[in-house]
Length: 51
Image (cartoon, rainbow, N blue to C red; front, side, top):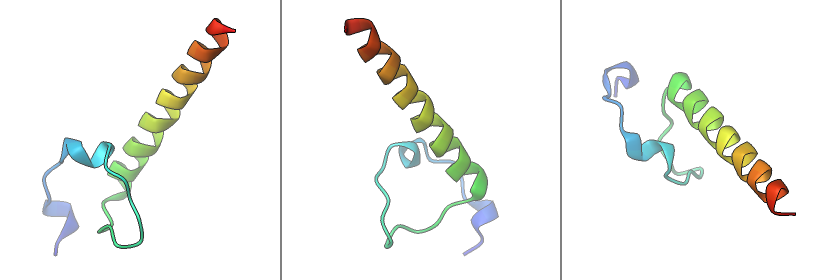
């Protein structure tokens, strides 16, 4: 399968991955990494505001 021709799927950003998950492009993987890094930072700041 030609990975460059696949359309972007927003569900990819929130689905769990394991060794059986079909690999995606590096750009989509980087987007997912930075999205979850940002979410975790925002959650950490929010929890810090509560304490």
